Image (cartoon, rainbow, N blue to C red; front, top):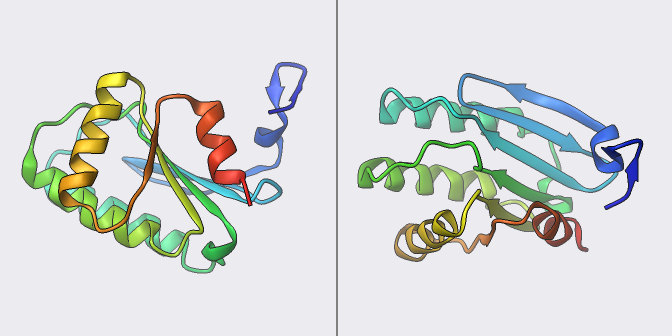
Length: 144
């Protein structure tokens, strides 16, 4: 990743496509990637996760996703052990991620990596690469 005055060059060409109560979507056109950032606000109900991810899908509807990599940045997300929430999140994330050429999830810790791998293995129809290193995740989703 190249840097200019302490700012990643990848961040310079970023536009925000969506900003909601739980998620934000950043579009890096020149780098060929989209980042869906989960903030630290806990879901009040499972329906909040569903409506938030539905809004993300709507915001991405006009994008030719097959040309882009997708990074789900979950580093700020509150840890959850709710199996019902996990099931709903995986179903909606699978639908959101399906059209993208490369897909990855970025978590904050090694424990988060293990949880993401376990939940993905047990519930997901799609395989997301799991990272806890931002630079490695960005290299993966921006590779052609």
